[in-house]
Length: 577
Image (cartoon, rainbow, N blue to C red):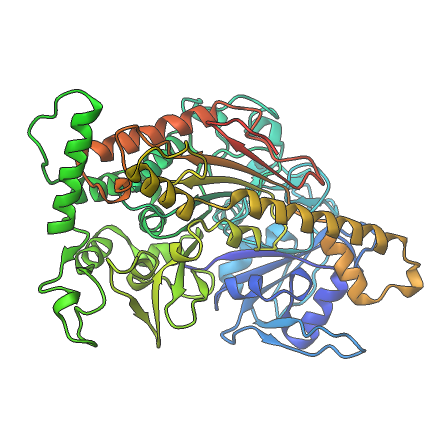
């Protein structure tokens, strides 16, 4: 499916692209260019004629079609140290893009990146108008906006007055708001899992707070505890909070694939199918009330899992690794995950996962180098092997070969993919739901079983505080660098300095909402390996209730003010940093 993208750059930069048949975005960053596919269309908007200019051009200036050649680097010369990547753009189809071109005031045959006259409004009056990514009237940062963009505003045009062809094409990718107050709740308005649908924003992209450009769902590893994440997603789904970036490790990668690999109206059905199928084995016909009986029953469930595996997930190897020759297929793991591959192929539409516009990433560890890697659908097509690799926890599960490399579960190095999101420097304000299955906090152990449980919690818990502290320090240093650049005399500012200053003007703000599973008193160190249906339903219900409680905290569901950096919230400990 062809995607439409809006790129923002000065008219002079667009003119140079026209002359030489290429495009650059985001101050020469490679990642945005890699997200664009051959055949996609790019519409350029120019806030000014020159970089940093105050002439108020505020017009769409070009439309073009992306060519097959991948992004490539090009030395700009003039003493610049950078080699900004480019992507070739050529002639855009006249028929396919005519309505979009009329909407943007781009008339006639578009050859390469030909510049147009400023936008013509619906009344026929020439008007350089404000194209605004946040809905606050300040205009956009330079960059590229596409399938993950959530709010764009055209002032003073009304979205309902746009030509239908243009509205249909652009709004597959972009929201066009005439008055954000009429489409969204007032700033700080209460929102919970029962919020009326007419308050939840524009259909298809769900509710999000003002100034929020991304809603991310970050899913930790944790085996059988992963049903908690399914409950979290159910509450988000019912509140029409729809993530546009889903990242996971281990069981979090599996849940993430089921969510991203299905249309919204089928996600809950597929999640329930997965969890009910892998926990369908009966343990006891009746369990008496009391923690001691639940401990006994959970122990029996764990032993059955160890002996027989779980249907649709993994099965034991015979004779097993201890009795297999080195190099044999069964020599490196206790279980075979072929059933999980079949389950993934049945429940996940990988073509949709790679083309729906949802940013998807899962983490794994290279067995030979020990390096942590992320498989990201903006960089490569995601296949079942990528999900299996993220969940290949040794020595239970086998390593997974992808290309010439072999991978294990990403939880060996980092069980929460939050850092990958924080390192993604694209300047987008984000509301992040981080779902953890192991709690870094816990009581002092009193016996060897509690020691083993506490050890596992600490080993696999997230490093959220460390990650956010590092993010704050980097954010503070960037703010200081911006102040220094603002004080530099204009004659000493190079083009690279201008690009850096422009980038520093748009540092993102993030609100991270932590949802951490709270262990029951009768659960021991094998809680992540206890796949009974009863425990699954309890975990699911816990995630659902925790998320409903979080969504009722309207003071949490806001993006920090400009310059605010990052804040974190926890529904159980109610801390705010």
